[in-house]
Length: 113
Length: 114
Image (cartoon, rainbow over all chains, first blue to last red; front, top):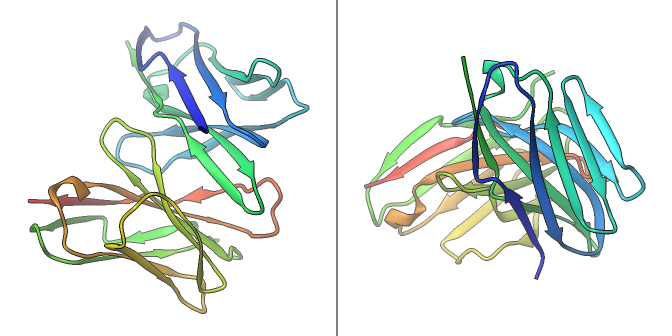
């Protein structure tokens, strides 16, 4: 069964600290993996995208890694800001004659002053 | 260049009623997907429309139906509403020929069923 699992479910950190969110997937055939940021009550916004051959992708203070062998990805946030408080969702795209996206449940990040 | 827009923003309905949600895709996009997101959960795929036809469907009952118009905009209809249908409904648009399948999401419609 195609699944995307994220951990932790929620996380509280102090402003200025770093954090790492995890994503494990059991999907195939893998096409790409995206991390989205979703503010409360809003639609998700793409942060990074990685294909099978990419190991690392950065977008400002966000750095995503991908290990296609172990089917694991992480999202590292550096020098967190209050505005980083949001849900971070890992999404894997597969292609089976048509594209299909499988969403993780997300990690809820709270950044405190 | 307008992004994905959805209407209405919020909606309150009673059990058993019917509801229609609307979505306008990002300019230039031809594919629209609908998702249901319960509180604290990731989005669940409902269905996808391309060339005015349903191309893929997730595990949702027939009470959920949709339509895509020639201008690529789309509607999601839900009949015989249940309390469990309360959720944020997200519309995402994409370009069929985009091999990365990048989706742009709208702000969502918050549906409350009482």
